[in-house]
Structure formats: structure tokens, C-alpha cells
Image (cartoon, rainbow, N blue to C red; front, top):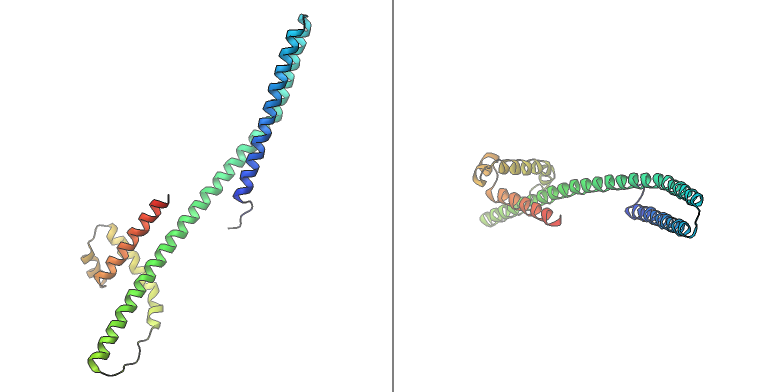
Length: 194
């Protein structure tokens, strides 16, 4: 997503708008006080009525000047809030995707360790060198790992125990436990970051 304006820009705009509103309010109060003082000094009833009309006219003018600024600041604040909500949503999506990738990487590492241990066991038993296994299997299995990971989490959320999940998906209990533990840690980290 291309940002048209940064967060600092919107904060600066809101600050300027608020500053202008305060200045207008100060001028309005000053003018009203000046009118009140002039009313006290003048003895004639006509002059008082004329000053009151002038004050009403001045305050109406100021209100008319402030009204568009208030509307624009309201629009800017709403736009700013929408952008913040959008950024929060994007950050959550990125965190979820990253959590999923980390779990997949850990599963792949676990499988690679298991393959390495099996290979070492076979080499020790036969006392001869065997060619290394085809590791391209690991690359193609990354999609399968992601699917299995999602299945594990889904089944765990449906209150399946670790043994049942491992048996149904035909994968080691250790991998099931690893996925569940990592997901719990990511959920806890996400709650703490809020």
C-alpha cells in the first residue's frame, strides 16, 4: 500500500488546525471583552444597542469562519483514524503470516534433524557410506508442512489431544507438540504486545 501522507504529517495538520482554533477563540474573547468595556463607558442606550448588534455580528462572523475549520479537522481526524485501523490490520496479517512461516521452518528443521539421525544410524549399522538423501523432498514438502501445521492447529482448537492428532495425521507426536507450543507462544507474544 502506498502511503499518501505519513503519520507525522497528519499530526502536524491537526496541531495547526487546533492552534488556529485557539487563536480565533482568543480573538473572539478579546473582542467580547472590549465590547463589554465600551458598554460600561457609554451612557447612551442607543450606543449600547448598537454595540450589542456589532458584538453579535462579530461573533457570528467568527463562528462562520471557524465552522469550516472544525469540519475539516473532523474529516482529517476520521481519515487519520481509518489509516491507523488499516495499519493495525496489515500488521496483524503480517504477524500471522510470519508466525505460520516460523512454525513451518521449525517443522522442516525437525524433519531434517530426524532424516539426519536416521541416515547416521543406517551408516553406523552398515559401516559403509550411503549417498545423501534427496533434499529436494524438503522443498516440495514445505507446502505439505504448512497444510499439516494448519490441520494440527485446527484439530487442537477442536479439543483433540496430541496423541489423536499425531495418529490421524501420521506424524510424530513431537512435531505436533512443537507446532502447538509455538502457536501458544506466538499468541501470548501477540497479547503482550497489545
